Length: 200
Image (spheres, helix red, strand yellow):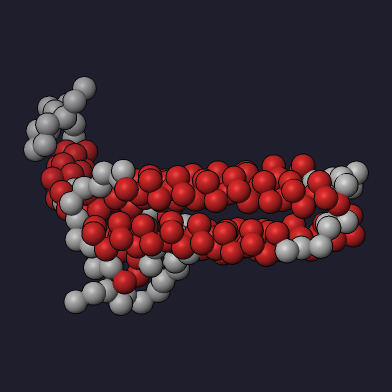
């Protein structure tokens, strides 16, 4: 049986009727997200989903490279495998910039600033990886006893490449900042923030 707001079935007693009316009144007073809040939530979801995908894609790529370098590898082979792995990471980072350029986001405050920050972050990510690749190219042959150090440095570089794409949403106005803060999926792909320091 469906109940209309304000309608009390005859079979209900007075106390039950009061409960129904109170529930109906509460439902009428419940606040729904405004169109601007819904648009900001959509932006946060789209952007953070994209950033999580980037993290997973690049992490999987470097893990595969690491797994390919075994104790049986010839030192020259290990160096080449790591260089090839970074070539792949750089290609992935460059593809990420194209993803940002193709983003279609609802019109919200600070949208342009967010897209510009993602653009710059994607470029910076590729630069971090290119710098690391240049250092790898100068490494001595990666013998078995040097594998841990070489791979450790590679993963540190990847962490740096991922951190520079994290938007600083704490600097945005409340509408967008709050949407990112409320989205659980954004927790590990944005720069952490506490007190609001929004643009005027």
